Image 1 (spheres, each protein chain N blue to C red):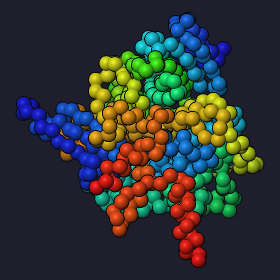
Image 2 (image 1 turned 60 degrees about the vertical axis):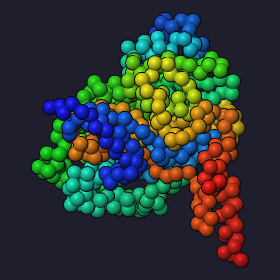
Image 3 (image 1 turned 90 degrees about the vertical axis):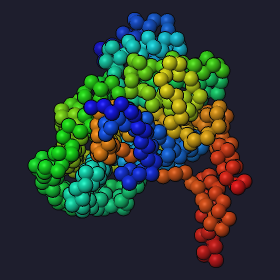
Image 4 (image 1 turned 180 degrees about the vertical axis):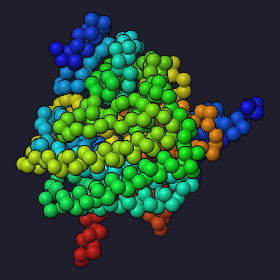
Length: 160
Length: 395
């Protein structure tokens, strides 16, 4: 039995119906789609079986909602991507900074770029975008095109 | 001892000790740092958004320009992600060439870093020597690729240039020179009092903290954690090449120096082995323009640590979403932990200790000098402007 299959079996036993799909496209890569309410439980479980390193958190704008992907690594080798789709119009998800402190900046990055609210995060102040960036404009959402963002940045300066 | 009152000291974005803009707000009690808040983004160029607008071929060159020091690591990561989506593999010879260029890049990046580190502690003679010798590896890179910074070696399905038998002796002799010099520098580092006094027990990162804060690369390995993408999640030809993962358990800036020196020596051995065992055959396989819907995660051990790219395709010629996480961002939480309890005077060397690379270039912004108006151009408008200028010159 491959290492990947063992992890998949363990996950299925633990999370049961909270898992939507599991996909192992190749060696050392696992994609797990879970229901959003199972996030903290899954992260805790994965950390306890050795996935102590979070490589990053990716946000994806799917059009109708926002998807989050937590990329976790097992002792550097197996990369597991834990995916969840957030509730429509209510981009809220609990923080995991208390479980894995290393994600503190990744959550802030996703917060700024996608407007996802990580509930319980100690500090969601601006990290990347310039000071004075308008609220509620999240540059990596699909609805903001490059032209839109460009006008936003240069309009003021052109008027001077 | 505590002075009872906390003073806030801003550091950056413009500061003589920083090579690139970045801001840290230090809270200081007397001379001791008690808290630090990072504010990044002074180099944010919206590259992830730009990826969504360009075709897969154009994106190779965009990925190359994410960073000027580890440009090859980014294209390796990018091309691997796309190859993964297409279910194709680069031919064996291409995979060996990727390893050789990646290791040469590691040597040049680590020598560059070592130079900066000794410069931060005021040891500029050492810095000059290191950067002089670094030219040897830059010359090899130029010999192989024709370029010193953006090698443009990788393409989807393989590499663009071969390493011909004529240049192999030149590479070997440069490697011998570099090996001799690196061993000498390691000896110098271990015995030089200036270096020892400024780096031993400075910027300590305990193994438990390093793992908890998700540190990567030499920063993690200098805290005694054996973790290297090349060994744990092998890509290119790393599964066929024997090498050691260099670790050190000193957990301080001095250990970070030793780990990087050790890695230079290890890289030299990897290149020698790869040159000896290089399979013959073609350099690249053909790739289709459009990529079928899917997603892939690609990882590479860049000189600074684990680099991860995520791509989601939608069946067209452009990616739906592209995500890049460079190793420096991963090391910032660990860096903030290292600062606590340290002296203000050690800020530059601790900061340099993680080998920060705050990305390199802004997005395309032109300033019209006469009207002082700024405008930014997209790729099509930019090519149109270049075309017009060229025609003007020809006419």
